[in-house]
Length: 111
Image (cartoon, rainbow, N blue to C red; front, side):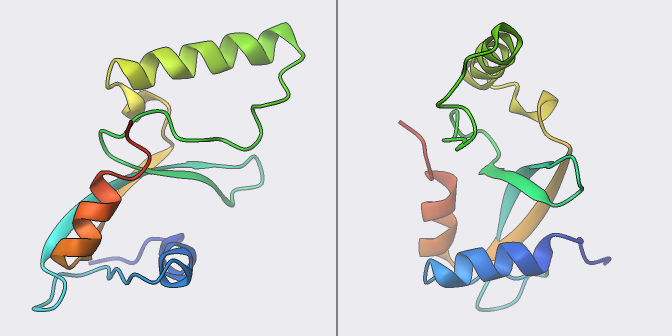
């Protein structure tokens, strides 16, 4: 199984939250958690959200002044509300977690 280029960053983020995910299933981490991601223009990880999640908080959007940015934000909100978040994503990956972590990640930012 190939390693995803953003995996080490995702593992660091989750470790800082006090949880652990792995790229492969194990006895301690048997539950698959599908995640979508969107890259920044320079190729670094920009957004990360669980599959089927609601519109996550994107830090760059609160100061929308340009009409084009408002239109993009509205379209993204609509796609998330319709469950079509995969259309926004640049890619998808699966990480494996234990039950409490998988439950937390699946309900992350859902309201």
